[in-house]
Every structure is written in structure tokens, then in C-alpha cells.
Length: 399
Image (cartoon, rainbow, N blue to C red):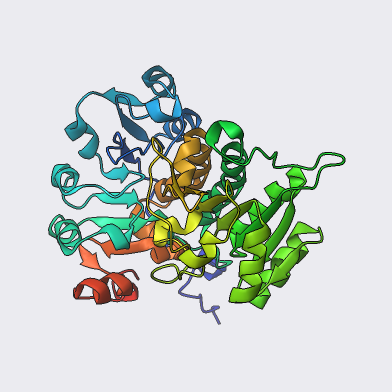
């Protein structure tokens, strides 16, 4: 009897490899870096080294002429790194991806192509409804780098700039304490036979931590106030140095302010920073003492604080020098730009490798956290509530 043959060949019966979804192939990005036009903003999003890294990976970058002047980067450096230098802002804003420090103006939004991607700060407290309506009209995908939150719950760019602000606050205070700046003539340090200067820091977050590190490094006596015991314990563990900590109780705080040479406001609030130092308390501080109100970005935590600028950074009230300049990191534009560039570059490389912003955002939750517009559709609850705009859950758009 003849043997019955199988209808399948030997090769067809062998196990087959599992077929997986293939992501979209790598996409070449067209990135535009315009010159910052906001008052006294000197930072830039990408350094020449970052531009070189991106162009070597096949991406195209257009830099507006003079965009790096505030950080002492020349057009030649960007050109040699592979960027195209443009003397026309419209050419820069014609790119698919726009990188800015400050949010674009309405005029700059008008120059952007529909369906572009915008990376910038959002600064909701300084915006109005027309700004968000303009982004929606152009169907922009907008990502606020100050809202990007990683898997550890950390806001990388905010933390980095807060570190700069904390260190800078002590360096600025040291400068203002000199007789040249009408200070009390004390050195912010520890000299043999001379009592050390006393620094009071209000706020135990990142700014407070790095301010305390810097002050301790110079030999000052440091006292930190915050209403969060968890933050106070954390800062004690991180500093590995004995410091005095306390919750914000008016009598204790006043006693420390009367004795201190420098007071640094480093509190943050969900909306406006709470005012914890009244004018009456400032009146009792030493003549020539220095207040550095880093919290001025959100209103300030000293009642006597008034916004100043980098050209005229101080005011004198009740004999106390007040430094209330918003955006302190811009004072150290080169360091801040390198820090921002180090955060931006991996995201841009990943967006290119993933085939575009849609795929990258689908798999990268931190990008979703920072995204407040997706193709012109508002996805940020805070903005929607603040300006009474329609909201769509981003999870319904990216899948």
C-alpha cells in the first residue's frame, strides 16, 4: 500500500519566527533655532557640540544669525558644526521643529508652518488666551520643556536650572555684601578669628539645597526653613553637614533674619509663592544685609520684593539690599545653555530614531507629560481650566 504524503513540505512544518510590529524607520529632523527676542534672554537651546552630534546623525539644523551671541557662541562655530546660518527669521521658523527658550510671540507663531513641533518653556502665568488659540489655529504640537517629567518623577530641566539658581544666589550675595555695592563689607566665608557670615535660606527644595551647599563651602553658617519636614530631613542627609533647620514659624524666622547677613528666598508654590517675610520683619534686619529672592519668578516670598532686571538688579528698602531678578540662570547663560542642550539632545535623537514625534511620544511618557498641544488639540488640564478652553485626554490621541 502506498504511503500517504503530507500536504505540507518539510520547510512549511518548521517553526517560524514571530512577526513583530516594525516601527517607522528613522526620520531626518529639520530643526530651527531662532534668536531669542525676550528681554535680557541670552540662552540658546543647543550648543555647537550638540548641533554637531545631531548633524552627524543626519538631521538638519538652521540657526538664525546671532542666536548664540548671548552665550558667546559665534555663527562660525555653528556653521562648522554643520548648521545652516540664516539671516531671515522666516527661514528658521519654516523648520518642522522649533527650539526656543522663551515661548514664541504671536508674530513668531504666525511665521511657523502648520503642523510644526514647538519645544519651549510654557510660562502659563505670563500667557493669555490668544497665545493658545494661535497655537491651536496652526495645529501646532507644543511641548513645554519645564513640564517634562521623567520616570523618577523629576523635572530634569527645572532641576538643572534650579541648581544653577541656588549656586548663583550665594555668589551674587557674596558680591553684593562688599562695600562697593553698599553692603556691610563682610566676606561671605570663614576667616580665622572672624565670626562667619550667617545665611538664612527659606525653602528646602533644589534651589535651597544648592544654595546651602555653596554657602557651606565658603564657610558660612546656614539655617534652612521650610514647612515640609520631609524636605528638611532630605536636605540634612544630602548636605552631610550639620545645619540648623526649622519649620516656618514667624517668631523663629524673625530671630534668624535679625541676625543674618544674607536671606535667600527659595520657596515654590503651585500658583503664587506664599509671602512668609513681612515688611515689618525686613525692617528689623541689619543695615547692609542682602535679600536674594529667587522666588520672584512666582511673585516672591518677601513682601518688600519688587521685580528688577539684570541691568539694574538691586533696590534698597529699609537699609536692606534686595536682588529680585527673575530668571537668574540667564545671568550665567553659557552654563545654562550647556545644561539645557544636554537635556534636549537625547530627546531629539530619540525622536529621529523613532521616526517622528508621534512614535516618540507614544513610547516616551516624559514627552507626553510635557506636551500641552497635539496637532492643535489642547491636552493640558491646567491650561484648559485657567483659560476655559476645551480639553482632550492625550491618551485618546496617542495610541
